[in-house]
Image 1 (cartoon, rainbow, N blue to C red):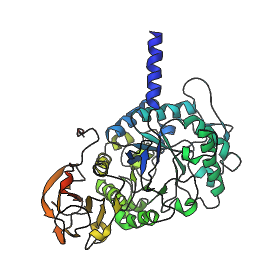
Image 2: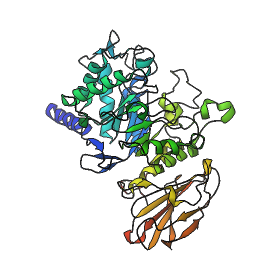
Image 3: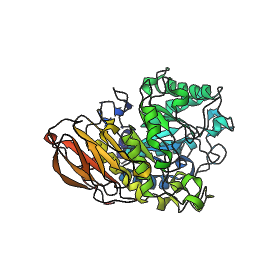
Length: 462
């Protein structure tokens, strides 16, 4: 019996570490695994995951997000809400004498880093990477706990401990890097050395989470350690923020790097931080952010819920007016709808996909915006409120185009009649108005592409 338990434990640990290593695609636009298979980064912001949840709660959270189709979880090793001095769910702190160069590693279960290990492994076993922030930005810029003295040794510790696991490294944490660039560079260097034994940035996948309205390219565009640019387009609506302009700006920078919105508007968040004036966001807002980002060239997307990121429960003081506890908020409709964007992108060849607004005769403005992206033999057009639009055809292969109306609210598809691939043509989505967004899929008919579907080919129950 003992030998059987050992074998089962070894199998579980092997499974926990079996996710393939990720890298930037050869065209520097997307993420792929070691074999070159496209990886769609669909993350949830769970900033306080390591700090506030116990193991049972963490498994409940991870099970839910895995069923919802997420592929990554953004979580912070040293959390914003005094993760330095406020113990985790088991009463453990991360450092000896609050010194990042002296991680509080102890033998036995339920030490601080044992708990992080457990959650990382559980996420990996469910097919999700942990997008790990070594520390919230306050610990560098405000409290100045992480400095050029200790950033590299702390990074080496993290790299050694998590370098063989399914981890994407996200430096920063809602702060400017101005004046602190050397600290972040030292942390990046330490992680790379910890992973590979030398300063080899090809051994890691790394980005930087900036403050609201910012982008990692402001400080680190030319740094070797920065594999992809991350933006925080923040908690106004996608239309008010015009997220597509910001994604396009990083998409067009040189050297070419993938770009992603690492924190767009959360579901159930006070819009522009003013619920009295603007109300709260809901699923239509987070869907618009998803499709406008993707169609502007993003390599994936991050979702968030205002109660979930802070893991709000009766135990904790609410921050900025969450509407419910995190266990209920996990099941909000926008969280379940994010996977439909993943199904869409994965349903067609990824590597050749580019943003192309020249397909649209009149792209409209604000929440009515018409956004377009295409590959060599397909195109997608998003109408944020179901407004009719006219396309310039003849930009993809094929004499005849087939396709579907794709519903971002349900993931369902309705076939359309074939059309000739020439001239201009007007299209009217099946419904119109706020929260009636649609995607038109047009394909080279000879390719016989199927309707978008989940990776398993079977639609989940929720």
